[in-house]
Amino acid sequence: MRQAIAPRARILLLLLLAVTGALFAQAAPVSAHAALTGSDPQQGAVVDQAPSQVSLTFSEKVAMSDGSVRVLDPKGKQVDEGKTTDLGSNTYAVNLHEGLPDGTFTVVYQVVSADSHPVSGAFTFSVGAPSKTSVALSDQEAGGGVVGGLYGFARYVAYAGFALFVGGAAFVLACWQRGAGVRPVQRLVVSGWIALTAATLAMLLLRGSYAGSGKVGDIFDLSLLSQVLETKTGAALVSRLLLLAAGALFIAVLFGAFEKREDEKERQDLTFGLAIGGIVVAAGLAATWALAEHASTGIQTGIAMPVDVLHLLAVAAWLGGLSALLVALYRAPSIEASAVRRFSGVAFGSVAVLAATGIYQSWRQLGSWSALTGTSYGQLLFVKIGLVAVLVGVAWISRRWTARLTSAPEAVSESDDSEESEEAEERTDEKEPAAAQVGGGDRKRAAQLARQRAAVATAREKRARDADPRRSGLRRSVLAEAGVAVVVLAVTTALTSAEPGRTVEDAKAATAAASQPESAALSLEMPFDTGGQDGKGIARLELDPARVGGNDLHVYVERPNGRAFDIPEVKVALTLEEKDIGPLPVVPDRIATGHWTATGVQIPMTGNWNIEVTVRTSDIDQVTVDKNAQIG
Figure 1 (spheres, rainbow, N blue to C red):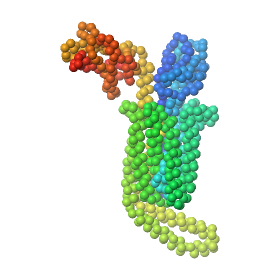
Figure 2 (tube, rainbow, N blue to C red; figure 1 turned 120 degrees about the vertical axis):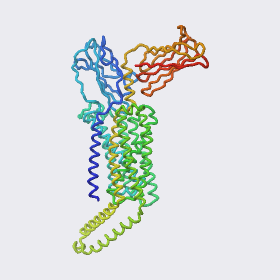
Figure 3 (cartoon, one colour; figure 1 turned 180 degrees about the vertical axis):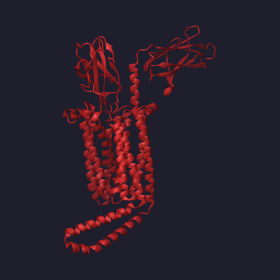
């Protein structure tokens, strides 16, 4: 049975690694998390005189250092002063030299969005008239290339290491304390710590080149490293390393002093101390992601960051504990059914936390159904939801095998093992004189024979346990569960690199608003009849400038003869049915007889809007009329 299972396990893991690699190949380079929504001069504009500065407006706040924006003349010579200025409202400027020649200028920018991802791009404008330019721009996106791939791989290894370290340690403390003395489990937890530490150091070295030039040679540039340490991401990575130092002490106690404690009271006290310390270290490590990535930007950051910490801890408890269980089932001499049952409860609680926190995170990062179906973030989220559904299904099968394993009388397996042990001892006693004669009293030879007999006995006992269909069934289901978890972790890493759907749509709306030409006011005439005495008239609505963003609204109410109509109330509502937006109510103020107005009326996006005007001519007589109009 062991020889049959092992090849299948290796093939499954190789296939899963191949899928993981394919996912990484599609995930890099990462999408930008901030978009350029406007500039002065505008892209492609032709101005009469050279401007004194160039300003850029982004969809969200970005981190910008000197040299982040460069302006090049037609010959490729840099003509800006190098120092950038924050003008507020996500707008940044760089001053230009005086006496610039006519021709086409190229603006190149590379900044870092608020959630730590690099953003780059370029555009041109001309002074006097367009001309040829010798500026050659790289076709490599920010965060791409070899450095981008290495950084993405380090991110994945960091997540995997966190899950193995935190989840494996939690499995030992909460489910199987005897596992603290099992060498394969120790190796798993220590390997997780080493992987997380190595990945964090790699990300710290790669960060400067990843967010900047993208050159492999800049990885070991100490000046870039010093700049990284001053950023939010650098501070998070350094904090993670400090917490990992505390994690090393935790591992030393867990697999050293704790494993050797025999007094029950001392063991309980040490368990309590390790649990408190472990929770602090694990929560701190999770917070280093929450404080530097998606959760730290956008809406409701005060809620999003604690929720992100809970989400990461639940992932580690489930997937890391699952890995520890898999190692115990395949490599440990034995594992109690009660330990498997306890982990089953921990996994169920983790899934519940993941469902609650995942729903909130999805809503926060998407914001609309269109973002779910029309953005790469939403599509990746669909893939993750499907994989998690498969994972939960396989976990349900594992729970059934766990129930069968725990329902079987443990005394039977124990007696079987004891009988085999007695037989092994009898055979050992029979062979002892012969061994002594062969070895001629040589203690070294006797010890070697004793180790061989112990190994044979252990192998025999392991074959007996492997023959149990309940145990082998649980092994197979846990192996499949761990395999799907590898892919889920890869998709999760890709999600952290993908631009959230909400920011994609916000950037599109902001870009559309900034690129819209000035338009004339929208004017609509809507005849009405409230049905009462003197209830007929015309409502004339004007919306200026009738574009995405803030608008001025005027409503003129006139009698059929064209004179102003003095009425008690007017209301307006706007609805974009194709996007399921609205009705957005507007209550204008009366400023004169028959004239009502409202300022700052927000139109969130372009489209064919339905505009309703409700007119009340008396206490009981009112009517609502409407028309459709293209806005923006």
